[in-house]
Length: 436
Image (cartoon, rainbow, N blue to C red; front, side):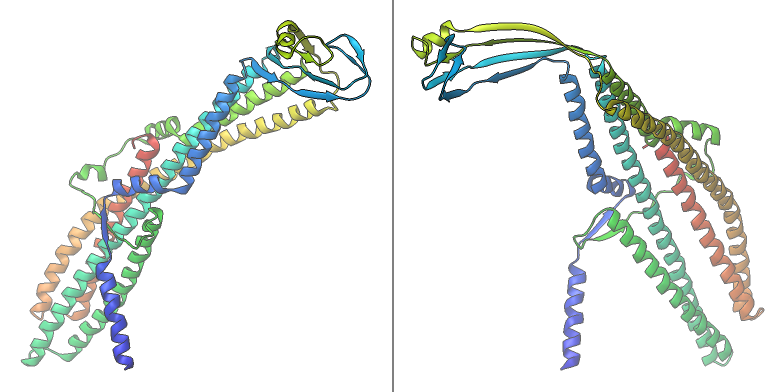
């Protein structure tokens, strides 16, 4: 009964795995999918919308405002009624609707500085959004190429295991006809067992890296991901690249991280000018129109509203004298913020330069390794074919044969890793150079 139950579980699990959808994606498709789904990018997009709203509001600050007010009042007791111009002691009903507008004539250019600040804040958020996209793209490239390396390593391991198994079958046949020896058979079986363990570890690494890529793409719907291998027909990309000075100049000119830091510094400098403007007088102008009604006046409501109207125009000046040092405190804290913004800009230059140096050095090292690994693999492969023939004819021992095979496989793995490291570093450097 238990065996049937276990078989049933395995059977339906197999059906589920077979029914699982498979999605095959290229590198560019993975990049687009990750950018469109990434939650941090969506947050950056929302921050950009908010920055755009703040910028628009700063522009509207140059316009006059417009206000309207009205009310209906019932008063008891004695008071002087301004509408009727008499002292009233009865219940009085009154209304005084009014519309007015105010315009700031001068405030030490505080509105200009605010608009300048909001514009730079908008640019900073825009560059931060683009930098987030670049970071996501670079992460996808790293993860994608890790999966490709795993696939190549698994291919080499599978070919090695198939080759060892074929040699084992050959040696067993030799033993069966009395021309082989059991020691060689046991040696092949031991090597096959070792390679199977290595193959399992490589498969686990592949599944781990594939999961990391799926998580970057936010593929949480159970879809199985498969990646499309890269085309290496143009081998010049593996050995040619621009000089470091050219690369660094382009990276610095196109770095969204640096552009965002610079825009933040400019925004803080504009904020400092805006805060300093609070120390100076401000001048404004206001105009308005209103009418009124009171139950103490003769005439109906409509006639009073028609006859008791008024208009006004005026100017005002506000001079700050003492506000408990709040303006000076804001100036000092904004100065510190500005200094920190300058430090952040310098740090961004340093970070971009350091990362470019590391990526470029890794690229050049991988290119050098690739050329050497290619020559090494060709030589070791030729040596292996020679020793293989000698082993099959009984002219060399098993350990020399196995050492030659191991050397060939190691050289092939080094060649694969060097090739994909070149592609990884080059693609990432191209991203930061502005070649998306």
